[in-house]
Length: 473
Image (cartoon, rainbow, N blue to C red; front, side, top):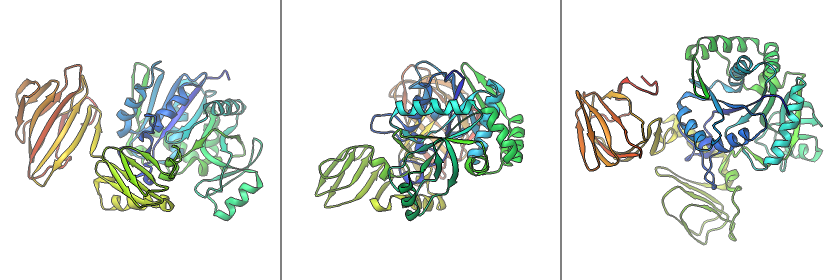
């Protein structure tokens, strides 16, 4: 495998079946597994350890950029290049891959091989993965659009299938009924469609020009109108929202793969899972003698065949069987294991009601750090704010609330109206409504402070930004 390889990670979607841990601002790829690594980090590590992987390209929503950068920086000791294409909103996989292919074609050349990985899938057998990638690269270098077919272990109805004869693809099949899925397993000619791909940038663009030329043209126009920011070992392309809204919302399977006569498949068994539900998540950890899989602080009595996960609080169970119990700081899920796929219904109901539990966690990540809502009512809100060393909040103002900042640990440089002051541990400052203000951590350790808001309206949208180092003005 001598050709240049650009692993391309698609980081989109929510993972609604994994609520309440997966939410719109903290989706499925950021879920941490029992070994302390997130699904996204595992995808990145698989990518960077491949031979000839010169950089990693990630296509994602622009609001997730700072979280992804934090995830990569903590596990990227060799500082491999990390490039980003930032979408203002999702337009499905064809738009994402068209953007990626045009970018790779221009920056690295049409013969450069792209390995497309999902940010939220798990691969447990790296040696088998690497062997499958090597096969795919050989096929891709011959001008094939290559997909990875997973050898099925059960008649799953939640996956699409590929009918195959060695590397030849006979047809793609939609998610089948249980009866059909059982027939597919018995025949031995069908593979699960993994959603991973391998092709040269030039090959994909030729196929797109044949099968979805209008979409490709719209993406080309969008890239021409988009802003590009380059720095040390990284490039960010912020897609123009108006142009991107004109791009068709369609998957790469429908738009290209199912139409092309130039598709090949690599059958593989690499310990792959799309972690599509809490049932799939529970299978990653061995069960105890009672059939229970437990993560976090739990006390059980007369409890069997349950999956229990608690991020912080102690969970006690008595006399229950076959349940999933997922506890977070602000939401609790209790469901029968047989109804794992229906968790998305709860998520959709929360979204329709515009409930914050579908969007954010109690602890919210920002480019500069985090904040946690400790208590709130109609007239006040108390937050714990952590600002990373060297980071700064925007210069801003609120119309309807005043704020009182108390430094608990570290030191703060505060702009308060016309003043610029240092606030040290056990000191505080008061910011009246209407005052411009900014908080900066000038130190080398985290700045931890308590913020007390008071006023008649405490929504996060009561903010006017004047300056912002993260481009949010």
